[in-house]
Image 1 (spheres, rainbow, N blue to C red):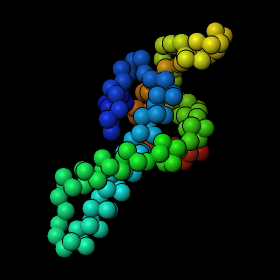
Image 2 (cartoon, rainbow, N blue to C red):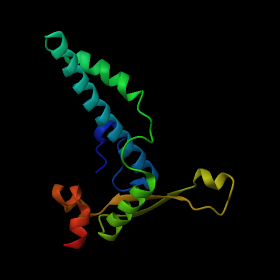
Image 3 (cartoon, helix red, strand yellow):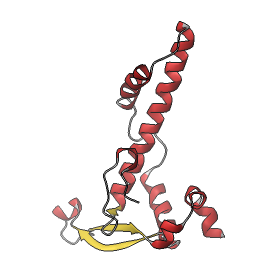
Image 4 (tube, rainbow, N blue to C red):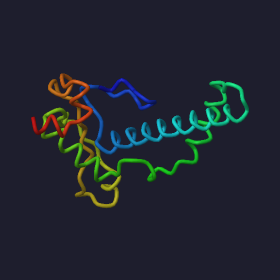
Length: 142
């Protein structure tokens, strides 16, 4: 919806964002959640070992240490999988091109290259419930 979850930038709902940017911030959110999960588990383990409760500051410090060590390609989704997922969102008519385009970096070296197309949520996408967004494959079949 463009409300800047997990530290992503705010997106103008009428303009939208390019698919590659959506993927990047989705991937960064996954990395952030993975790092926080690892930090909390490690802090709990250290607290049990030391016999005292861990502080949120300790978990935050471990989070910062963890997030800097997680390689970008290690976690979850690959770009091709995201492209397949995004095409499903287009088939469901949950996202649509907003009409806004910009030159891509590829066009710096190849003028006839494709521009970056911006996508936005549709009314159907906004109306889809959390369970549908959690499993769009089921929504597509149903």
